Length: 136
Image (cartoon, rainbow, N blue to C red; front, top):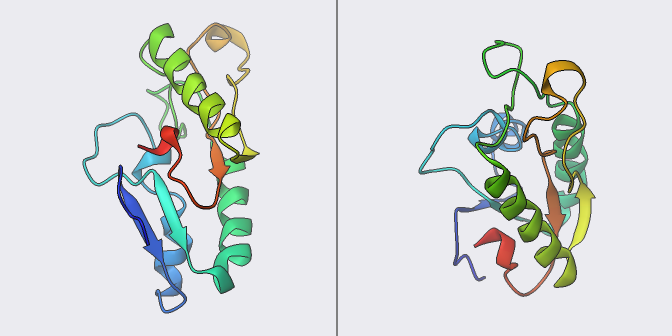
């Protein structure tokens, strides 16, 4: 198993149910903070993959984006146009390398005063084999 690169987490069948449920809503999808333990890749045991990803994608689709000062907001905007373009380029690289885009992959369309903000939809890429450039 190649776990090189940024923050891989391995999810095995023996993992406690509470951990499996909370793993897909870790710091990486709760807000814009620097977290040194933030995982960017999940290595999931094959026989729990479908169930885990179903729950995970459901939670990711429900993430509330918006005003970072609103306590109901789970993800705020990116810091700059340059940052959102960098994120988009990583997603493009992943898809070009053969990853399947499961959710997100584009700027988020918010209404009102945040319509021009640097919001990007929470994104999940699925791939086998080679480590995707976007996950490094």
